[in-house]
Length: 100
Image (cartoon, rainbow, N blue to C red; front, side):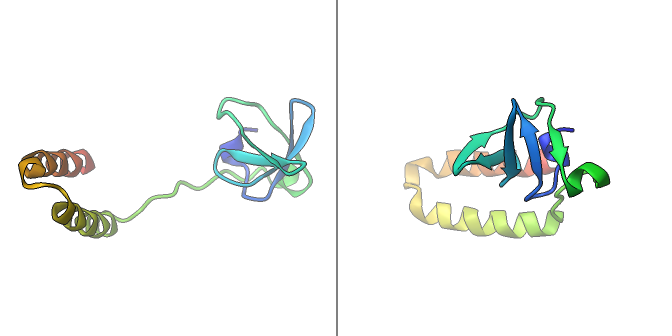
């Protein structure tokens, strides 16, 4: 099983140590956090072992992303000097094109 297939809080064994998943790619063992590579093969413990539940993709609605980005862009326009406004507008255009 891979780290992205485990739910948050799942326990597993990696490289002989027991970990608890604390983030999308992070786990904690004995109070120390560690990045778990996406390619790593993990041995689930407890509940996760029996359910083998696939992780659900985290999709955001396009309209929600656009609203958040436009709020961010408006704040950037206020903070970026006039001589950099053209570059900022170009970056905005590239971002919006990437969404399509």
